[in-house]
Image 1 (cartoon, rainbow, N blue to C red):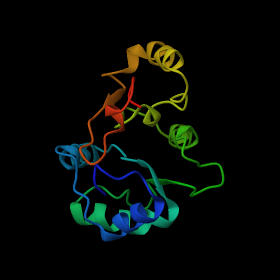
Image 2 (cartoon, one colour):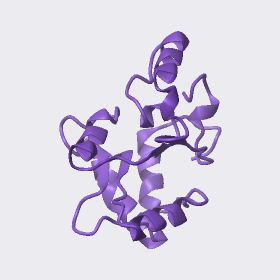
Image 3 (cartoon, rainbow, N blue to C red):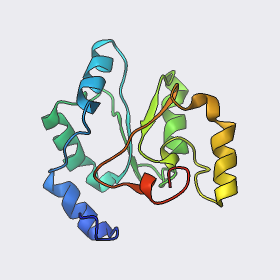
Length: 154
């Protein structure tokens, strides 16, 4: 995918299947350090259930913790209520685990109320101000930058 193209599911699936993504700098080392301390690392992704096998293969090849005997890859449409909003998947993790950090590259990685007017988004941001930089860590993703296109991490 290139910056001059809009998102298309077909080309995205082809990109995922090619297993050519690279890790965001520091992500692998961070995940490995957490895993070494006994922290279970979950990957809540909007890649689809059909895209999970090549995603897992790539992540394993890169050296990311794979979850041992537990499925830590929570993909969109893997279960009937797991759509593009990630709240149900975050709740699935929180049911059995204390979530220490949520790391993502756009507002929707942290809260499902990421759509709406600028004023509505600002209110959601303000309501969660204490979480930013503590429980919620926003990172720039050089592969695609929805954070660049709008107010409050579009």
